[in-house]
Length: 348
View 1 (cartoon, rainbow, N blue to C red):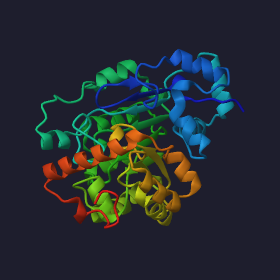
View 2 (cartoon, one colour):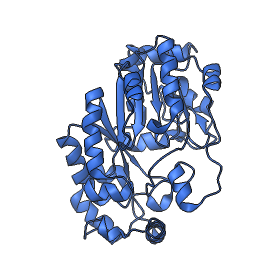
View 3 (cartoon, rainbow, N blue to C red):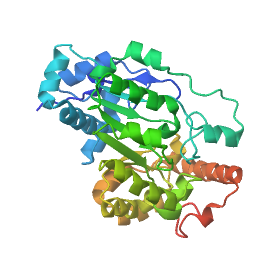
């Protein structure tokens, strides 16, 4: 089996601030010709360190998820897909699209560039997403009839009218077999028209952003409410059996990793986790050495190695920066995190 990733050949990801790339996990400005060349030599590209670290620790990486997804929905073995890439028949097959940053949440690791709710809270003058993707532009650059997977991100994609216009265009092109993933915060109540459109896609997934349970969830993704999330999960299960979770891990919620994972397992919700890299003060490593030692006693060795690195002096300074930022956010939101976080929290 060759070392291979489908993203450099078959994927395109457009985020709310207009970045357009085959993979959002590689550094900005990365040379994808070099990345492709490394994979074809059966070598790990240096630019793909995030997936390398995850796989080395025995965790499922974004590379593996994309490979298995395209393998399954294209109904082609990954080695066959690699052969197609080598033959330079690399039509776009996987599209991840943020048509706007409209959102109703003020997640602690997010900000005004990705959330209109954050912009209102901070009275931010930033004008909004730079991509401003229109349906005409998307059709011009993308053959929607050839898409195998289409992921809608945001912002909150279930708020965005253009996303449903794109789905209606797919139906007109007789491509309702495409795998549709809505990366949602799980708070939106769908209209009857939206339900009607979504029901016509048999390969439909709702990937719900969940970073903890109960009051921890409500703090991480303020002002969303845990009971509303549970109700919406039950409703979404009436549209599709394919419910999954996207779990963002920061230094704020890593302490409760075992409880969060246990809840996913109880609910039979498969998940993938994403350690925060930016802002760096919310990275899981931004903790004092003493707190990392507590985590070492509680996390499995596999999780500890995947999420935490050897302690560095700047981690203490970043931890203090995280405290200052949480204080700022709490003041803006008019809340006190001690009312949300358990009493043993690293940030109380």
